[in-house]
Image (cartoon, rainbow, N blue to C red):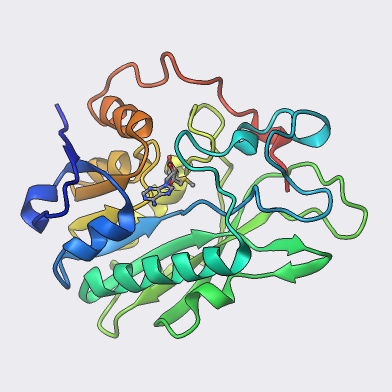
Length: 268
Ligand SMILES: C[S@@+](CC[C@H](N)C(=O)[O-])C[C@H]1O[C@@H](n2cnc3c(N)ncnc32)[C@H](O)[C@@H]1O
């Protein structure tokens, strides 16, 4: 059975291998030594409940948000920080991810542009100053746009931050930088990666140890295993740690959790 380790302030990289660490990812990453992983693949919370205008708000219970699982935030994280605090937090997390990768390592950091107070809020503030090599566009399938002021957004970004020696797996450079992958529909976690997206990242790289510090339902680990790679997961919510554990071990991981999220109604 995949072990869940309770973080108590100290941890070695070896002890984390193929384990789920229950704890705050910034604290856990800060406890790990430099250059101990090959690839980071992660998607943090997007701060969706900190919205302006007709955006998502806490306890929203009607209209366009009623089918969006994320409307209640995560099990143990509200996803509602003042903007500057969110950016500072994410920059601190990205700094740790970049410190943890080896000289030929890379970070695949997924986030999403938003429109706030009528203007585009892209995520350049988070990645500025880090070694950004490419922005991969993840084109999802359609959603619903209730806002008359802009076109329906269907894309997210995957920032490829990497050290100089990072190279793709042989032949992977034939792929374009626009990836069309449908969002996940059958996962009860409120904001999961589709496996196909992570399969594409892992099969395009050769690194052995894959870290996901915002692990959620453990998609990165499930995909890492498919390709014979090792994983390290970090997740703040014990409920999601247990969900990932059951999923990695081939258990009935969808059982007893909230309903799947009905992504065709996902807010934009
Ligand atoms: C967008 S979800 C990741 C979903 C994941 N990619 C999957 O496929 O299921 C973000 C996750 O970050 C977790 N989280 C929020 N704050 C955290 C923190 N400080 N440390 C670790 N995990 C955190 C949330 O509980 C949530 O599960």
